[in-house]
Structure formats: structure tokens, C-alpha cells
Image (cartoon, rainbow, N blue to C red; front, side, top):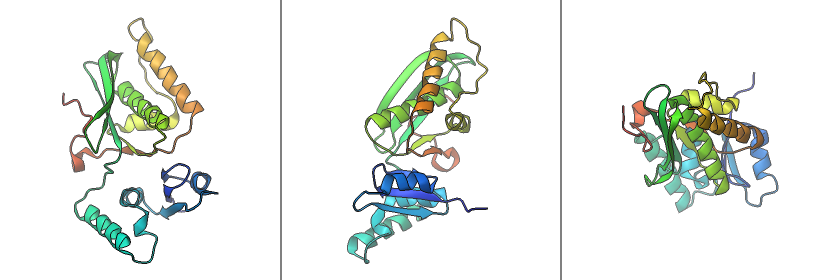
Length: 213
């Protein structure tokens, strides 16, 4: 059985972390000065993407030494998440109930988008938040990571379908329209953005958290 690899593209048609050689190849083939490398684990790939290509190319230049030092500092400080990214989160009062979600720049704390409240569930909000972030970043031609603390929502996005039992009623019609739009977007678009589970126990609540726990 082939060993799983993660491919970091620092310079290419799209940049980011890819989970297959074919996806990596599509983004580096024919690109002058393309910079890319494979890694055996997602954590190593994330640190490498954040630290820059200089640590993996070059002839021991000053910039190369600085990049390697950044990697070591990242590991020592357990700074495993990538600051140049978006964090998303949702909040819901009841199940179903008034639901809202938002996306925040992890580096600056700036709110990039905020939607709701409308009637829905927390899982639906988390799902819609990720898809909203994907569309937001694609319009800006950015392939930076998206963090979510919802494993369920991440799974739904990978399935390209919200596996919810929420009944379709007059109250939930609006959120169901959004679900269908999100599913259609996933089925008709490709993206290079890594969608990564936010590790609350290691890093605390992410900056998109509504603080209602």
C-alpha cells in the first residue's frame, strides 16, 4: 500500500497543501521557478508551507538559515497552526434555532464575513461557513488554509453534501436554499485550500468563536 504524502506548493499556479501528486503536478507543471516538495505528514506540510520554500531550497544562504530557524521555533513553541489562514465558526441557540456563522483572519482577527441569524442548526452553520470561506478565498485567488473545529462539517464538505436531518418547513426554507447552493458550489468547483481541524485543546478557541459556550 502506497504511503500517504502531502505536497506543499510555495510557487505555482495555485499554492497550498495538496493530497495527491496529480493535484500538485497540475499547479507546478510549466511554471517557471516553481517551488514544491512532498512531506510524510500534514503537520510537517503545514509547518513547511508557513515557513517558506527557502528552508528547502538554496545553498545555505542567510535567508535559508532564517527559514530553518523559523521552523525550529514553530516546533518548540508548539505553534502548529498557520497564521495566514481563515478560521470559521458557527453558533446556534436551540436545535434547530437562530443560527449564524462567521469567518475571521487568524493573523489579524479581522472579521471577513458574517451571516445570520436564520433558523438552522450548528452543524449546518459550520458547513456553510467552510463553503462560504472557500468561495470567498477563490474570488481573491488565495489558497490559504481554512480552520474549523467541526469534524462533522469538514466531513460534509469532503462528501459535498450536508448530511442533515433538518426537516424542510416554512421556517427552514431559507437555510435549505443555502444548503443546496453550497452543495452545488462544491460539486461544480475545485479548490486548493486545505481544510484543517482546529485543535481547541492545543490552541484554545479560535478567533471566529462566538463565545457562547
